[in-house]
Image (tube, one colour):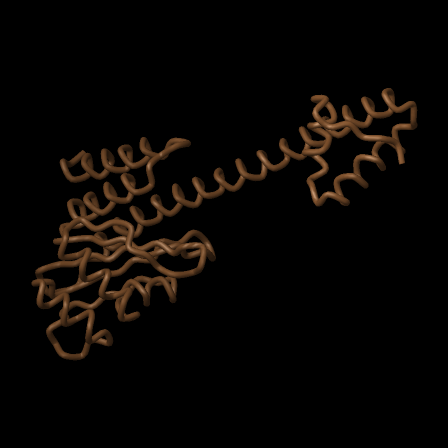
Length: 238
């Protein structure tokens, strides 16, 4: 195994090791930006992710110059990352100095910073694109096919990790909501039984008493049941 192959393996292991249940997504993407610059032999890297409103946001950059250019790309709504995100396909421009770039504002900022070529890779999993990785170089010319394949593999690995983390977060919310509903139902059943026994009425009538009180006082039924069980609220049969 060559030194470069060993380093690629080490980087993928490093990124995988950060994908724990409570992993820090910003630290993870900062690492990704730095490792992309290292492994792909480019000058800088920037990473954009889409938020829940569908807007792209800058989440990581391997240099301050790249960060500023990415922010300008978002502000002016033009640039390779936006195109890669929108199309779900890689976007490459080998020499930004040729005067034909489709992104005049982005190109001017990049060239002023000393970057003369750019490659944007979508962060995509099947039909879902969650962002894009931007690779900046101070050398003109396209990236090799092998470099693009490796860059896309890094982007794909990051995408899988982020999508998995989001799915876990959603699942935790659903689980918490379900458990909360179950706990509320148990509490309400306890309050029904308590009222039924204390007032000498049926369980259904006891529930009707609590429900009527909750609606009349614009309160949550669970809160009323809690106070009934704790003896902080006294209700009378209707």
